[in-house]
Length: 365
Image (tube, rainbow, N blue to C red):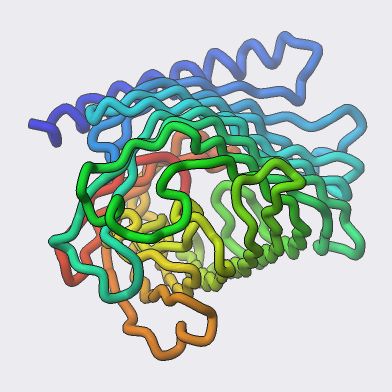
């Protein structure tokens, strides 16, 4: 039944979005702000941790006055969604470019009524220990970067999550554990970021590199309830093999120090490591590798084959002696906007513990 509902919603999304995009293009031609384009459409998604979700999604793309047409467009997005598991998600990510891409501003405003999985910590946590905890919180992400040399930028970032409304299971493994942050608290982090970005498209790159590194500190003097440091390095590479056949690779490594709240631990089950339940394995450190082969099928339809391997550990050095968890899968793509490349993503990933279905917007990485 759910599959039929998803299919019907997808058809509605396809036809409505195409019609809205056409109407938007007509309006843009008559508007004096010719570089602004707006697409809005109903959206349906399915994730293991949300069940069936539905709502609306809008994306505006534009270039500031004086910016060349060859530069990347700035984007502002807004999504408001509800899920069959009684969750509410409101998010507004943005990515702005000015001065011929020398300045880059990005971040997110959001408010979430959500629940997360908890299986315990470490790469040997047990599937039968599964429980969930509720979290209602506002979120803020903001960073500003300046290009120092071509394609390389450095800047400052800030992160805020107000986890002051956490509800955990009575007498569960989380309540009986000694993990940091189970009573909730405020996360307020300040850090330094560096980007190396040569992608040819920010939505659906077909060639180039994207390397993001960051070091953040969380301290009470900046309003945090916790004190810890963390870093991550996210490396992505895209190569066009032939025509529209593309190979995409992602390597991610991260570590956080003692005192990190369990709410901010690294984990498997992200879009990189599809197939695992969300937060199935979590700990201070993570190392994961993912590979995708993206290929055209016909018209607006395309497909992918993907695989990943990753692990978590209590510290950075233990990553290389931990057990690695593998997943494979396949997926279907449908292009909503040919010019910018926005698309619907439907994936099915399989791990040793079973499979998971994903239906959402944008590529996994």
